[in-house]
Image (cartoon, rainbow, N blue to C red; front, side):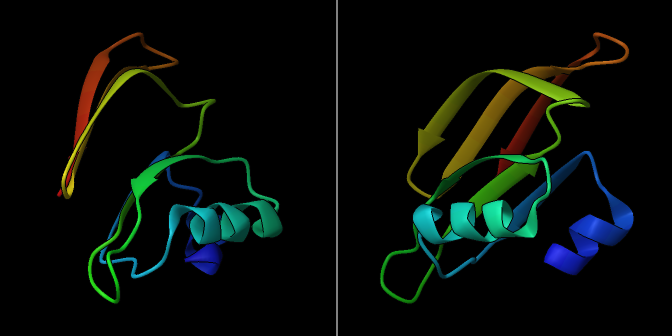
Length: 89
């Protein structure tokens, strides 16, 4: 994941079945020295886990909804002000 982020520099990345906690995911992002924000849910035991990573220079999220195994963010594309709705299940 770190190599993909460094090489391709996506505006947004949705990860499913992370199998780790958000604390662990935040550590990975922090240690990679990449500038990404993150929202997610912990894995339960060895199953699940979801994370949405985004570059805050490209996407600005204004509102999040989190339900069991579902994340939805409402925001806008920074350069165009176009609205976006991103969901990860």
